[in-house]
Amino acid sequence: MLSEISFKDFVKEENLACFDNKKNVAIGLLGITNGIGKKQLQKLMFLSSIEKNIVLPFKFEKHIYGPYSEELEKAVNILESEKLVEFSKEIIYNVQQDTRKLTEKGKESLENPEVQKFIKVIKEIISNYGENGNFPSAKSLENTCYTEFYLTKDENDEWRNSIKSKIKDALSLLEDRVQIIKKKNELEEKQDLILMAFDYIKNLLNEILEKNIDQVIKGVLIKKSEEYIDKWGEIILLDEEKKTKEKFNKILLEEKKLFKFINNWAISNNVYDSVFEFEYKE
Image 1: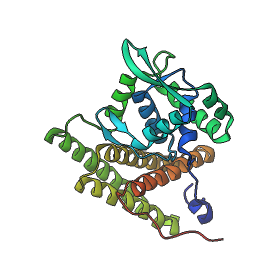
Image 2 (image 1 turned 90 degrees about the horizontal axis):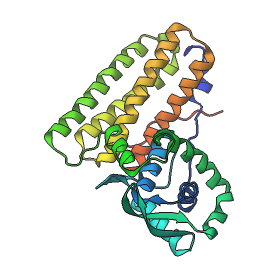
Image 3 (image 1 turned 180 degrees about the vertical axis):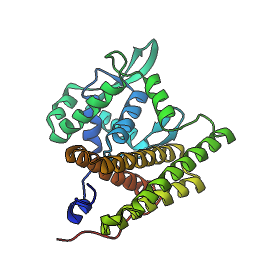
């Protein structure tokens, strides 16, 4: 089925969902809670971007409790100064926490189209990480971030070696994909583009291996690269089995968006340059 896709369709750019307004995004998350702790706010915002491959106006780095964005904290503080958000001390899971919630004035912003769009995203994330239908706790979100994105409280040789092992395993699997695609001469010019994308992932993983990069940034790029390589395994399998085009096209679309997200994350965090200078013109 790869050979049946037109070159024009194959290189067609798929746009990622993008949210530019920091206040609107923060209001969207706060608007569906009756009060949320700092850690919950930070972790849910992080997970919404990574799990849904969306672009948010916040950069995240490793902090005491995992992924943290100073920009997000500043945005919430600005909302407080504008009387749109209020802070209070509340008992959450038997622990006193600083909670943030929208004021009545802040709730007036919930009808904003961008706010509504983000609410749809974050509701799905909350349902994925909630416990027995409850709102996800700060501790469970922290554990998810540490486990899923290969973070550690203290960097040590054991952790560094595990990261190196993950990258080497990913590179080995990627090379298997490379050899399969190289044999598919019927793909013609699409073959070169696929191999260029594979080469980008290979160079990116090697860059991560060699550079001293923030844990969160490193963890996201490794996890998403692994997903990308695995998804190509699905594509190759479906291509060989001649499965339905609908399922094949769906996975190919997911793969294109995933690759774009990896590229965006690498560029925005100054890890690696953009991928192609090539662009299809009508």
